Length: 425
Ligand code: IMP
Image 1: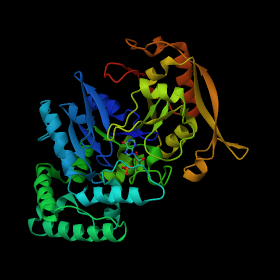
Image 2: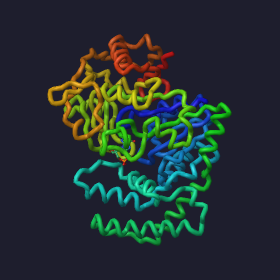
Image 3: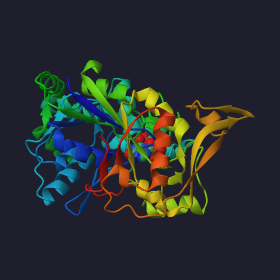
Image 4: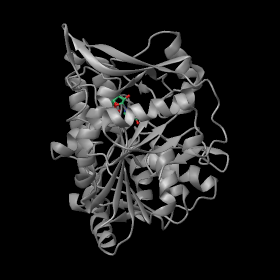
């Protein structure tokens, strides 16, 4: 039994792509279990920068098979673009990608609904506009369309047409918006594009379980992060799925007992895209400097990410919710520019201090972060490949983190490049 999970511990964009790419060298199968093309996993490979939204980053490693599990919502247009991108770089996808027949499709009306609900809502979530929320709404309202239906030529078009007409009524009656599309043509185009999935449809649940039983190594990669989890995150400013470790079991159909390692990926500071509370946000020149040095712009939407100091109250919560067995700290090089570095160790709320994270947006937006100060290392980290050779001030910083959250740090990433990674045995 050897499944390893890679989980985002913050509000996404922790650098999971690089960690998955690194670990996938040692595994047979890499699987995605939730979310959709809202994610953006950036990997630098052979000098080229790849941003993958849907296909697991393991596809860059020619020995791995990639699985998109039942918990993912699939936009065939995004999939087509990504396959094209990979083919342009001679990366073989055919025969190496399996898509669950139980995964749900994102239809054009989901994207229209996503935008309409954001425009009409009093409190915009700041979604990626990729139709993620509306696709999951349909899944749970039991009117979604599963990939497996693609095989049912007779009824597939009718089902899409029926749903589309219902959504057009919803959009015009509830959101007061006129949909200016040629319905026949939009459906024809969708039906043409969706055929690409036919090459990859599979019973991934059985495939994964059989391979786990045979002793194959599986890496399950989460998209987004713990604080964007629909149950455990800063609701309602969250995504519509479960990026936390529990989501891997339901999103792939694998038993909890098959999971051996749970690696939490954590940036050495914090970022957030979209709206919602962010206690350690720096709306000043320090936040600006982090954004610039860390190139903190959304990989999917290009939006500038909000930046702030590391929040250990939130990280400790992530360790607890996910049952993390180790941590990977990324982008620590970005902090090399500062004389002093701060980490949040407590929240103050109405005169009281707490070390417990508060996953309720209204309350969390009122807390004041209490910081501990560290000396900066003011050094470039290029070429350092051993833990002991890292600057003393940096070691003080990471040791404090692991002791505070009670989880060992096993990986430190010092640049986007595969080579700039320190593995701590
Ligand atoms: P949705 O997932 O598009 O519905 O967006 C809901 C919230 O999750 C918004 O605040 C998005 O900015 C955020 N979000 C979704 N995917 C990602 C991601 O991959 N990284 C960071 N934030 C994300």
